Length: 377
Image (tube, rainbow, N blue to C red; front, side, top):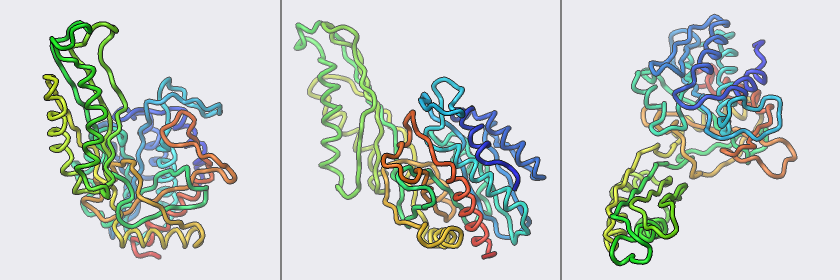
């Protein structure tokens, strides 16, 4: 493989694109794959693509996500984002370069089957691009699917792996309250909307913590509170938006009805009208045991036994979970922390960056995993 993956990653980092807008990223990937004699196919959504490597036989899939986040890049590096307010703060540029590199390396081998490279759009959105890929039938015939996600808590050269749940379900919640409004000197004559909003903001997470088994790990955190624009006027409308995350799939399935019931109960004494918009995001990523064992063996084969480390289930969400509802597979955590660095640069932050040695590590592991899944190792 002659392609410089570091430069590919930096090019993607300089030109990030938000979900469902990844036209340039898609074109760049298509060009690299076509130059290797492969036949990439752009997804029906117009961004994202798939590309098969190899001949008939067992079909294994490798998935990368290609979209960026609406976050300003604050790093002082030559490959800093050139798009104002958008950057790869979650490492999707790394995931993309790794799957591209693995695919190009596999294309140079005689394979006993096929590998489907899935460069998926809109992972950061709800609903995510994984559902589009599935709807297009691109998992049909796939026996196993693998993916990686950057983990800044792990030093480069290490891979975190866990059978069973490895991420959480993540949903979006909006609570919109309305009332007649009024003067702050006469709250008893109207609906004290801000007070009602504050009651929901504090009361809903508290109530959930008492009505859901603590072992389910349910966590509701608000990211936005908005109401009013004058200190002496009670507003007519206020809104809360946030994310609900939960480790347990059964609790995730019950959450929408419970949130609706609790919100209505909390606002009822104040006379406010509440409209709850509960948007399903993703279920937990649940690594299938056999696929996880195969991926772990691939790590040991490619990097040595010391590279494989245990990891814990996190409250982060990932739409790779939808693939695992259809196909057995596993997601690994790719260490990207520079050696000796005491404080990792966390995901979704304006300063997030990686040790680019992780690219080679990721390629080696995914190549070994794909070969093993096809019965070649």
